[in-house]
Image (cartoon, rainbow, N blue to C red; front, top):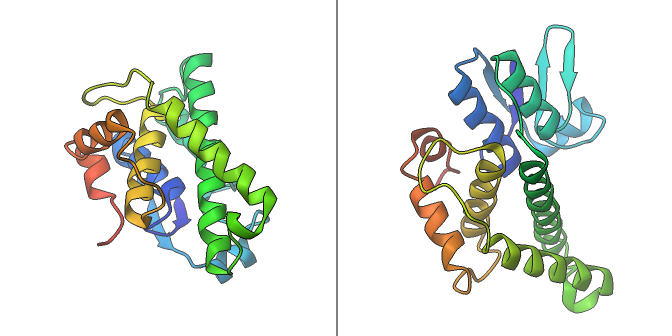
Length: 185
């Protein structure tokens, strides 16, 4: 089994955490934009190859890994809804980050203003989540920790209004699979 991705992607990080948690044998193949554009129809990371199985999204990869190891992915609709909300905010935040590199920002684009507002309202709601105080974490919580840590790594949001989220990601660093998969400093 091979997982293709980057060390900085929060989507890839979550898959790497799942691999550590499940103990499944897998080779990590660091992949750049050009390679992912060539090898994945979605032109993004992560993607996974396991024999006849090719998966092109972190959600399907996580479900595959959890089930391959005999576990489950997102136990109920509440976890699924939270995971989906976190993904929506994460996608929007990543897109804002990448577009900013090209000089396109919410200041000069009404659509991006809406995306920024989506991020802000979603993060405010996430700050109200009741979260585990220690491992084990469910996949919605792991996705949230990966997202918030990426926000900090890329300096994307002022998190001072969100003390519950900053406390959550700080305590998540005590969890070895989360800590060892952090982006290179």
